[in-house]
Length: 264
Image (tube, rainbow, N blue to C red; front, side, top):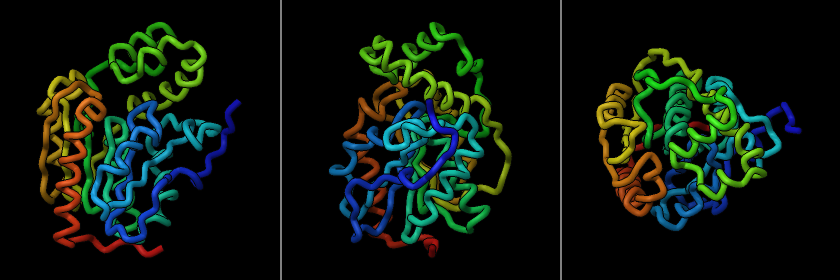
């Protein structure tokens, strides 16, 4: 049985600490994903970047903790976890659910702590002001829920067909989908950091126009880039995505134009 309390001592992972890095990149996974999603990234981004994947409750080192099912308390939890790590310039990358989480976290840090990422990379997610056009799935019965997972193509078939693994995974996925499906966008001042939006050319979940609408969320620069692949181009076009991220991160570190980091 899962515990009902939350602790963020192992929420921020950094398997390869890099004290010489000039930027920390906090990476937020998609629904059902863990910090392991970003394992291949460590050796494929500039040495000036310290990659820090986020481990959400319910998976990995936080497996014994209850997953959040609403966005607001999740973001508050993450803000507390990140505060000790904001002593140097930082950027956010989030894919799908992770994009929404990182966006709301950036807004909270700006609103309550007067600090901001130097860049927000959002991937595979429509802009937050656009309502979800599809009916919710987090409360579907199990056969229908698993059918939806097949359709999304983000869970390996071998996992979907493993009843024991699915009994562990389904509560996490239901909670993550609830985070997304109960989210209500509230207008706030636009972010001061640039936003880059990444999308998949064959992604049936997010249209090009829905990706472009992220432009409305920043008063700084906005750019977008499309990659071959469906909603999980994060994996299928990984090398292309990492090349693009590397170029942008190198440009930022070379420019040296950072927001003032937070002092713990």
